[in-house]
Image (cartoon, rainbow, N blue to C red; front, side, top):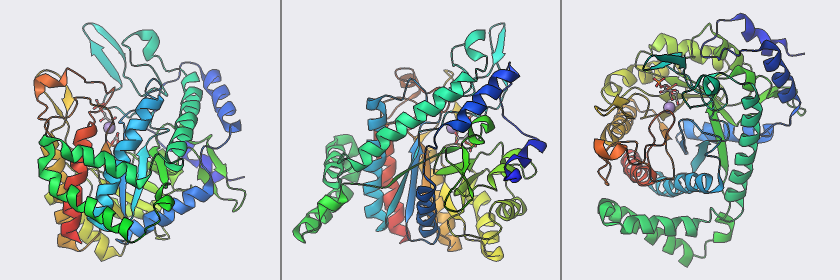
Length: 443
Ligand SMILES: O=C[C@H](O)[C@H](O)COP(=O)(O)O
Ligand SMILES: C=C(OP(=O)(O)O)C(=O)O
Ligand SMILES: [Mn+2]
């Protein structure tokens, strides 16, 4: 049954761990196959519809969360703060776009990381690189860095409890529009955020207007919230891929949305081969070396039927490249008649290492890439459909700049990420306001 789901095994594959014990990983795969799905196929279908609206310019997508979720970070406080940040940004974006915002966390499964090097050397010791909590530990010891299959089961259970809380927060009253608006008012009162005061005041007036018209705020207490992660670790994704009893079609039930990373999107490689067979909406990261031919080959492989909402291109060009690299792709998409959802990831093309040794990103570069994304779409007449960011709800110091002027020396005070630098709570809200301004200009 469904032999196509194992065809990827005959293709070259990148970025997988070297499990030390073949029998152990086999046992874990067998166990994971028996555990319940994390999401329901009907939810996945609904997300595909929502993404189809965004691709058609009738909705906007906000995807955000950690670069690398950790098991230790799956606490109520941290999950709440992240959800809160995304909801706060979403309200502002909804106003800016005058459109529904599709809210999606890089959450409840964003545990596996592709790395530029397989190994890490410190002093005279060389160990396997950290590949995310679902593979190995971050501590620089041989024991921690040795891939451990039991981590896959812990990843599954951590994803399940995270998703449970996400569902609770987003349907139990926490996401109430009036509440979220109140949080944003607090943000706008911060003197450092004076630049956004006017927009915040407009939103406040709009909400008062809604109230005066008798809007049913009770019906706005619940929000749809989806989860997605990079589909990378095949020993997790394949066992969680199940056949939907309603349709007899395969769904990867580890998340609603799966994207294929920049390093694993090779056309004749295992990830594209596998994910082309699942019904989930699929994203693909497109870096600055992507040619229109490559883009079209990916569209043909992953979305041969040109199904609305099926395919998302997440461009991550870098602020210095986007104005040259994106327009040819947009022109080719028009020429070829494809209408993918276009999302900007202004994080992964803008990495730097500071002189004091931190992996960081400049807030200004992130904003500049977002602006370049909107400019390119305005010029091409295509739809800028969403943003994808690495963020946290905590007051970390990982990205440089923003209204709080985080500088290089400050990075060391709260640098907590185990992989890439994230926008902190304030920087995320600030970006939300800036994107809302761009959306207004585009509408
Ligand atoms: O999140 C993305 C990648 O995993 C990350 O940028 C890779 O970082 P590295 O270059 O430190 O391996
Ligand atoms: C690995 C990531 O990005 P990319 O594949 O674009 O480098 C990521 O989103 O964390
Ligand atoms: Mn990352």
